[in-house]
Amino acid sequence: MRVSHGATSRMLLSAMLTGLLCTGCPPSTPSETETLEFGVERNGTLRGGDNRTFLLPVEAHARYAISLVGTAGSLGVPDLRAEVRGQTSPENVVLDVRGLSLFRPEVVKGFLALEDGVLEFYLENRTEGLTLEQGFLRFLLGDASLAQYRVRAYELGPDDHGRTPANATRLTDEGESVLGTLVFGNDFDYFVLAVQDGRQYEVVFETSGQAKLATSFIDRFDEFNFEAATPGGAQFQLDAVSGTAAVKRFTANRSEDMLLGVAPGVENLLAGIFGVPAGFSSFPVRYAITVTSSTGGELVAGQPVEDVVPEGDAVEYFIALPPGTEQFVTELTGPTSLIAYINPGEPGSALDFQDFVSPFVEGEATTIATDAAPGVERYYFNVTTLSGRPADFSLRVTPE
Image (cartoon, rainbow, N blue to C red):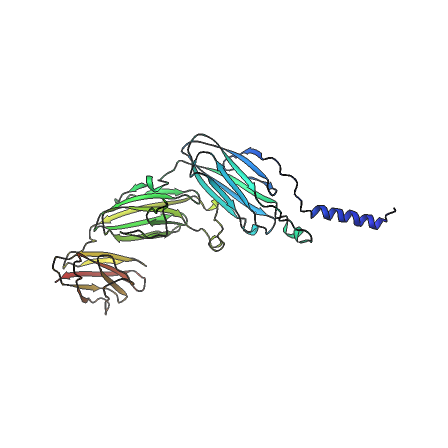
């Protein structure tokens, strides 16, 4: 049979297109093994179902981190999964990379090596069968079953503070700054501060990047929840950024070992909106914690105390009522935006109080008489401003 030149060209073109758009994947290739050098990026491409193993030499009791970035085509969603295999804390470190390739999704995981040796970093492309059957969209967007990856390992050195609540670093209230560093996204540091009932404390938190310091407790799953309130005692969360220290003042309502945790904050708006990790480029975050304390959290009957409400915060006091007290008088002096919430048994707030007092005229004292609740040994006074701005004030409480 004779075939025309035009028909031959059409057959060749059809064969080329069929080959380019074929959805069949060649058999998976065996895993390739290579050694990761710290700080040196490794990159490559994996077909759907393929895997690769990297070796990571480690030393016992040193910290490490691995960053994994993945893309699939131009807008596809990569499905890369990696495991750190060996003796590490935490165990079973897994990195899952998913998200639009446009945002180059990245996962960073840190861990502690428990013994000298070599760890395996096993990487697998779990994306299969996502090529297009026909059309030119594939030429524009690329083959979504092919995953491009970038891997970088970091040697972080020994841990500077307690990495678990069980071995938290102890803080003092003597005004000496404790320095620390957050070196990867899931790096948390823990501290314990012993507070005494009735004493006033000031915590100053300074950072080189975004980070938060919070009080919390260990839940039934042995986790420290930075968003949870403590079962009792003082509770707060401080968010700090470079150049702006976060400050918290509080009065201890009981003597206890207060557990605090430090964690990285969201580094940029894009990460907050799309849930894309900020990545290792945001680290390290250096921080300093400074704690001071003084007497004065407990009021002396009939004696005024002079103080300042910090911006956007409150100052707490309490008074021990003598047995048989039926009434007490609270006298407050300051700006008209000032307000003191009065509550028995525990600190009050705008949503929980028995009584309140606020100056009618700036600079002039306003008094209020409050009936003492039966059987209550302490009354608390939460002094703040409705404007959120700082304010000088004078507070006096007199039992009758």
